Length: 251
Image: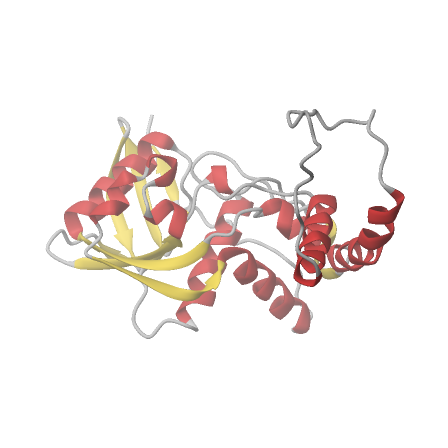
């Protein structure tokens, strides 16, 4: 996955990027040692601090923007959770408005959702912490047997929330799989929206590499989350999750 940068680091990178457009940096030939640890013992350069300050202020102001409100915290858990359900449901909704075709399901993994959505005001910075990766949404077309394999992985691994589908876990396998209210048909193909990271086999989902087709939706996963929250806020609605049972666990 793409590495996560803190707000301060983002400001630094932005400032340095802008500065590099104005003047070409040339390495000093007199530098004798290049492996120099950077820590608090090295004082900040006032000149560069002054350059960076305006960009840091812009980034900080943007990250502090409140885009919605959550009456309760949305956290994650095995199989299904308020956070997992909220994210996969919005992935499906936002993708369907952009994709020219049918999308049957949506999934992500708990590993990609870094922090819960806190109770109270939700800021832009919160969503960057929740989804710090530059992941793009893609629609995969899978044959019925590959879909069954994915559900078996989800049943055993417990970490893949799913939208518009339900299943039962028995002895570590998925049974009674329902997609859009209909039983899984192994002779049919299905579409599922997920991140490009998972589509490439990330988080042990190499099964997705068997996709018959992969198509970009045209939106980053983080942007889809923020767009959903802004739309809810515009309607006067809070951030919340559908907690209807999606996975049944048999003893």
